[in-house]
Image 1 (cartoon, helix red, strand yellow):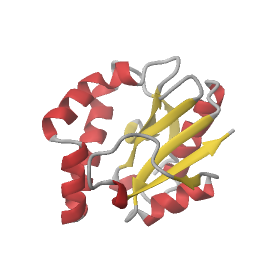
Image 2 (cartoon, one colour; image 1 turned 90 degrees about the vertical axis):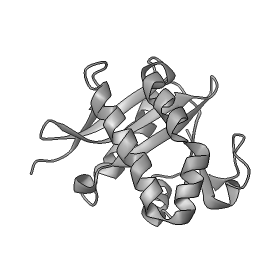
Image 3 (tube, one colour; image 1 turned 30 degrees about the horizontal axis):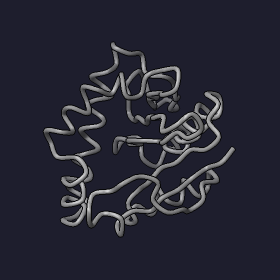
Image 4 (cartoon, rainbow, N blue to C red; image 1 turned 45 degrees about the vertical axis):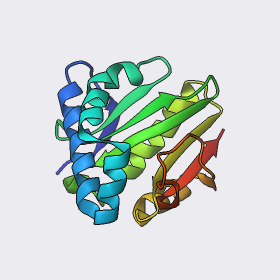
Length: 170
């Protein structure tokens, strides 16, 4: 097994791979727990998620957005995205590693690359949220220098208590 590398997704050629990883992420969330299933279906009902998957290239378009993939032996094993919120703020979205890539350091590499890309793109701050139950993800973000904060966007009712919000300021 070779090392994982992180790079910009080659769109549109790799869009199906990115979409597959995003659907796998949704499936992972739904299967995590009953509570997570309800939360996921609140944030990402299947029909709306399908529309989001079709809109990924526009929603994360360069020069202010980005779609990165973690690649291992020519296969996309993870993905993450940058979405502009304003001229100064970006949000990291849909960071997901396939089961085969977990525990390899790929999540760290991908998350660091997303932060580096946001910095290179001129953002002053990067925001993200994750589920309170995702202790490894929370530890990773804190290791990268993210700090806890409150919500930065409107949320579906009843979801805030399940999430942890972070920011990284350059």
